[in-house]
Image 1 (cartoon, helix red, strand yellow):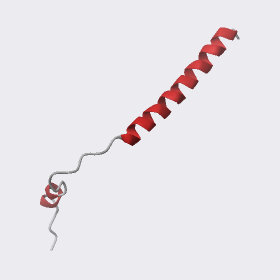
Image 2 (spheres, rainbow, N blue to C red; image 1 turned 30 degrees about the vertical axis):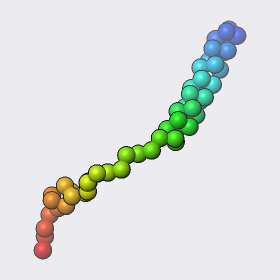
Image 3 (spheres, rainbow, N blue to C red; image 1 turned 45 degrees about the vertical axis):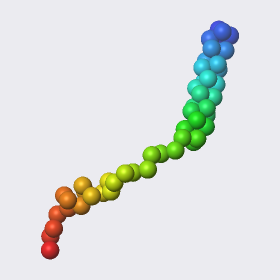
Image 4 (cartoon, rainbow, N blue to C red; image 1 turned 90 degrees about the vertical axis):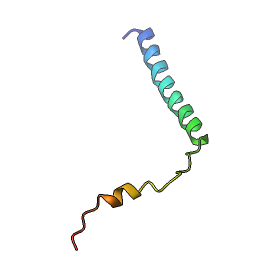
Length: 51
């Protein structure tokens, strides 16, 4: 196997791994927005009443 092909594959794999780690670190800093209303209210409306 050509040495340059092997080096390219190793660099690609390391780039994917490092990129995913950096994305995880960045997404851990972000906060989720607080819900403004009850999101479960619409589900209660469609529940079957088998009483």
